[in-house]
Image 1 (cartoon, rainbow, N blue to C red):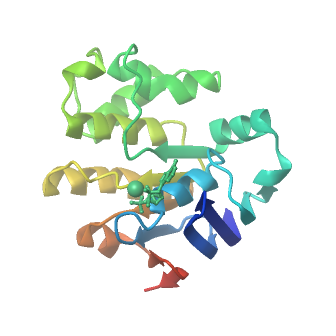
Image 2: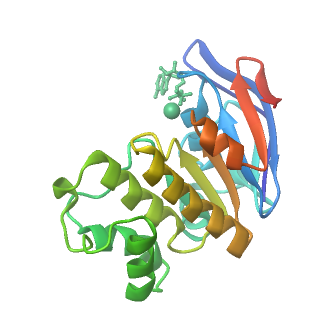
Length: 215
Ligand SMILES: Nc1ncnc2c1ncn2[C@@H]1O[C@H](COP(=O)(O)OP(=O)(O)O)[C@@H](O)[C@H]1O
Ligand SMILES: [Mg+2]
């Protein structure tokens, strides 16, 4: 589902990561660990085509990102990707339910029942009509998680999605991601500092200055 080869990225003269190789099969749930500032979010942005790498390649479902223009990458993201941003990026002028439904609307498949099911799954029953400004950080994080899986994308990228949650709620949203992977065969790359989350993963990888190391 995802193949990264020899990917390197610098900001100006500062190298972030170098020579990263990574392969994710369908149905794989992989945890990516690494110290703060090592480049985990940058790597996810490069995979999503939101930032361009300096060298190397990213293939998603067999498609080479570098062969697409901006529109092509946006189309690929819309249909193929669910992304939980570290900073949530919940849209302030839409309600909670509208935020969660957005990927479905962009695909021309609105589905209020699916939105309700996800509100329930992430523990936000009854909050669909609220404005994002009326939610706590932990609640916003769960809106971002529901939005990332609502359209059952084949590839899920989640950037520290349980970072603002208490252990019980973290466990609950982790189950939402795992269920999605097990039921739809999606591949999921989960950036996390949580030991509990890493234990649930099929594989644990670590990003360091030398690239990605297994285990
Ligand atoms: N847009 C940017 N411009 C310059 N430096 C950046 C930018 N984004 C991130 N960085 C730097 O790149 C490094 C990796 O950042 P990041 O990918 O956010 O790390 P992580 O997610 O592992 O904590 C950090 O040193 C950060 O300061
Ligand atoms: Mg980060």
